[in-house]
Image (tube, rainbow, N blue to C red; front, side):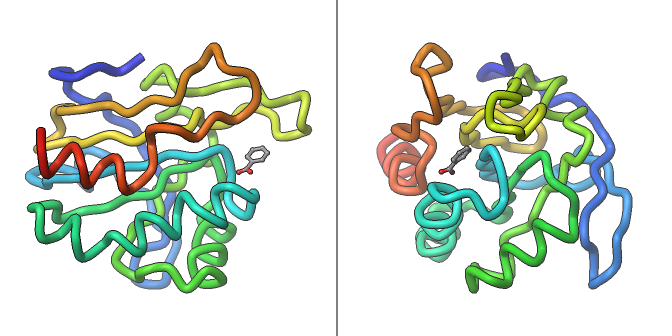
Amino acid sequence: MIKKGQKIPNETLVNFVDGEIAKQSIHEILKGKNAVIFALPGAYTPTCSATHLPGYSEKFDELATLGIDFIGCLSVNDAFVMESWKKQLGARQEIVMLCDGNGDFSEKLGMLVNKRDLGFGLRSWRYAMHVQNLVVQKVFCEDKNTPGDPFEVSDAQTMVKYLTTG
Ligand code: BEZ
């Protein structure tokens, strides 16, 4: 699993860019940025829709005040689904949907998990990380030994607290 101090691996994502589907390398996206990325098991799923994405949307301005200049929402979903979900929730437009449809980036991060029991196939584990110019500063990873879909540490409020107090 990716850890503090490591450079994030490079991978190609297929995102919506200016209304069009486009390939983008994650290094190209995050180079020089003071970024927060939160990752979740799926667009339109209950906790992700009720709390995880809305939480980061609500805290967008507070995170910006704390020096964050990029917030990305990562999921193993395609760009059409991710963009439609963001619109449906009325989330902040500035949040960039990072669409790891094939799961390759999540796999390189050690965050790809098997959710076949739910009919989801391979998905991202739920976590959040602070990445400065491609180097990981902090990972808030939900406990992989807890069954189901724990959501205790990867929320926006925890990220705000960490950025405020270190
Ligand atoms: C949820 O976000 O609530 C959820 C995620 C994955 C599977 C089931 C539910």
